[in-house]
Length: 265
Length: 302
Image (tube, rainbow over all chains, first blue to last red; front, side, top):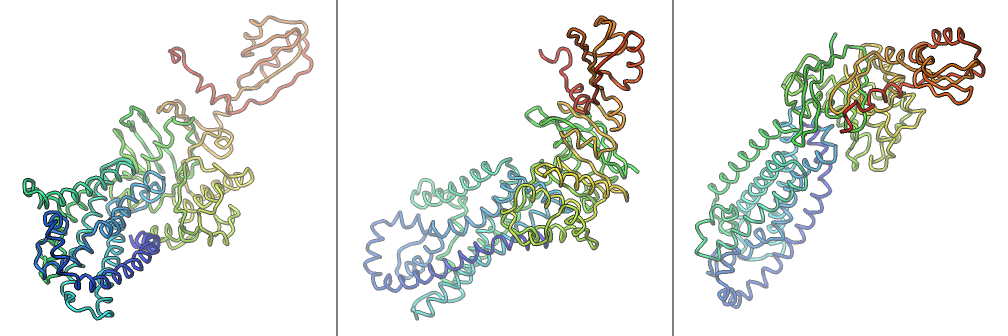
């Protein structure tokens, strides 16, 4: 298992470094623009009020000045682009197993003297370590720049800590979900389509359920509803959400282990 | 000692293709050839033996264990494998890949250097990325992966694909050296001369079923001789067939045909009938026997 971890970590190291550098840049931009944002808050509150439903659907919070401060940073983590980068990393690493089976390198990998479940565990741990580093870089980046630029009213370290926790668990949960899809679907193309398709539908469902009261009942099932970054930045501990993502991670990983053992390669 | 055994092993894919009722028994120290055309079921059989595929029915034992069970997975430490369509991690160097596999197998005594020397694989190439390797070099690297941990049994799916003839000879020597202290090789091939050169026994698989299982020496004894001679006086085609000439063709005085087995008896009989001139004869190849097995049976064409 250690050998697989080392090989995979070496493979993903370049990607991780690029994402970390990107995150440090993005974090600087966020913090720098935050100051300008706060100067224009009055105008922004007025402007966002015009699109209350849309805004609520997108970031899931209301419109008081304090909430809006947290929402601004909250958008950072809930922004589709950041979600795409973070989730893309975890999901693509999981889908890599499917690509290995298709390309033939899986033949040598799965004929090793290791149980298949151990092999995917090694892969999953490597991906999780990568996600841990990437998530940490974004949180530390924002925190670092806010201190360097002496920005006032930025949430405290405790808030950022919870953002990191909730973000990390959401992403490993989706990584485990993709791993599960890989283990039940035959080809890499199908696994990619199903993984990205289902995650996109959940994201869209979260967005629409936030906008349309008629479908609000489905909101908790969209998963993203529980990704309460503004709440975390406001300094609230998100034990329930973290536990939920952790349980879902374990469920998906256990199911993946079960199915990989029984499928043909 | 039996290294590998299957009883009525069947693997059927949802498409209906597969292998049926495969009965094999391979002994220690043997080079066993698995011969068949493309799509006959060679790779499927090897993948079942390695535990990559679940058999639909029947029994599979490698080194005394079921390859899908815990003990079987543990036994893979004593197994080497060279896949047919070898794919390697191209972004890594050859050295990284060899270290990766040796690390997983966790062996103490590596014969990596010996295998590399036998295959004329330069150690400087281990520092290059596999993506830069030629096909032949990748195949050599695959052979080193399969053999570097001194396995007890090695499965090879078309091992000499992409190798030049000189290196092929080195591979044959390497395999002979590997089995002499008790190693076992199970290799698939559609290269008959390769099988004839290195294998002790051979099974021929056709459309997912084993149609012949014999010692290579026995198969060789079944070879035919292609003969050509002038005969005076002429005798009829029927007479030629009666004295043992197969598929006779007569053009004026010239007679052509095939003699199964030893040509001695035929030559004695033909000399009793008259004088022969311009006798030419050559040993038929194993291919001819193979093609005999693959000749469509009566009714197949419908």
